[in-house]
Length: 462
Image (spheres, rainbow, N blue to C red):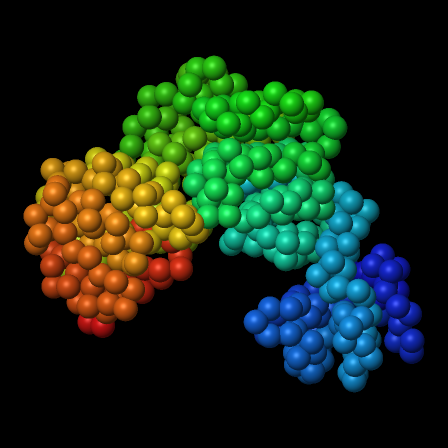
């Protein structure tokens, strides 16, 4: 981004710049003073600490200017201060202006209870074969991350692929209205955030907000195997296309062949091609179908998409295979978890052949609200002692699953640890796991099973 202070002030309707030089050029924007580079504009946001406290640090790092909330003005600073009612709103206003008036790329917006980051990565890889593409970094998918991604675009960006998350009603409405996508994608409806929404139907309602900003000539791409989406999509006036495993979909897969480090499948529409993705899981094949439909919208040839999917870069901590210190194979999927995702990973993990034992290390699934205990206990039918021989459960909510499994597993094959006992669990795991074993790590990110992963790989005892 390159804009003068005067232009920025006009767009966000900031108070006059007083003695500041309006012709000075801003070359970037950040809300983190630690990442600030000379020439940037600082956005002081309200978090655990008030971002205005870091304006001096921003000045020392070479910032050109800073937003200042009206209720904090006047403020002593050497920087040009753009006084606005709310710095976050100002950043969003600036992002929309930059998107529509300065760069004007095609926009693909992707959401879903699971799979949105992987689908984003697949979609960007496909489109990058033919266009200059910018995608959401990591999971910058909220009301801060989306405008930050927009403002990071170079002027030559042709397609912007945005991941959009939500944890309350109205959030996707705001993000979609900001980005005005040409293509909107919903990967699936699960139980993520059911604590706040109470039912999957209400989650579906909230996910459907992604079409609120969809252009009139845009395309809505959604999982046609999900009845909640099929029902709601009937009201959509824009072009609609579906993906899934059922033949009724616009694009559907069959002949799915799973391997440890990749999954192969074919698509009815292109029977002469075998597609391969460098990750495991039938659910990731469904994500790939969504990406293929987007690629088709942008006229990317099937064989080109095939090559792009085969080599796309997977975001860290999502179904990674690693080798532990004892030589065990570790399937790490510790970024997030809900019942749908947990069942899918357990199923796929169970199907891989191990010379030794299958050991599942499962942590709490967060934000399940009043249904949490029942949803945790309900995972019992996904675990079979003949397929997953040993189970380690960690966290307060997993106690319900431990109780539900007590009649299925022998006591020395079922281990439960409360939140305070992670170090003990790590020690027990390290003493238990052998060279021929296969280990699954799966939990919500708040359980931080990445520390368990690190210990198993390094061999250091807690």
